[in-house]
Image (tube, rainbow, N blue to C red; front, top):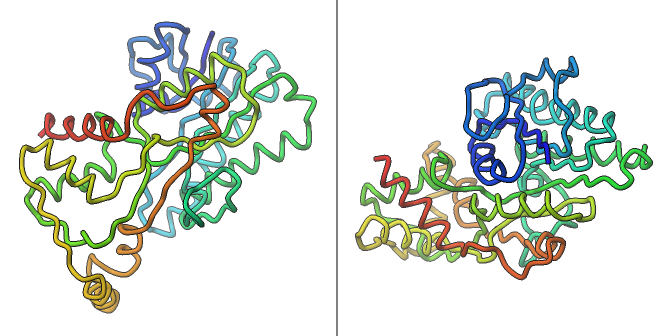
Length: 318
């Protein structure tokens, strides 16, 4: 297949190239265009508007902005990029009937809170930040276009993928921040909070995208996550094991921690009730739908193995 990947020089795009290039011809769209092994050519968004993109069979839309600064003056950029670029590339897909597959990378952040034991694709959307809000608007645009012009999408595959937090070697995200704290020997004081979360290993993600390209699956929304959920306490154990040291987890009273967080609200300290809630909430994401669509029983990489691989990479670059 000829495949067009937007945001191709980012973390996910670079990993996808490594997985897909041996079997497919890869083109990219990005704001930078360095030469890259496995990529035929990287185009600009202006090239897309000028119809300078070669004929492709599939589009994987990764381009977006994630990290929020909290500055209201910068809020529009999330909608310009996460929503606006999605509209632009989906309109291109819609206008070119020879392109049979479109995969849009959205996010589980379209649902801020998990109601019940597990997040499924039919959960009511309720984004809490600009990232989730702008991605949700992009999803809604795609769904509205498909509902208004169903004849354009017959025998074509449109998948909206909602990954939980993606990690892997070379990725700088929240896992890296947690590693930085633990590696300094700072004890983890929230041991009494046995929360569970699901992550997405980049290896599992690449495996799923490869499967979505090879197989015909129904159009729709698909969550993406590893099979196993992990508690923060378990994650700290994995980090310390990679560091070759014993984990220091304090099991302080929940009432005491909550009281400290409330003081943090008043004194504007790093630990406040909002941050405590985020650090201790459960966020388990179901991947049953995508596994059923691909005809697989489980992901190839166990969650703890994927996390250990990522954490070992942090140690290597220090």
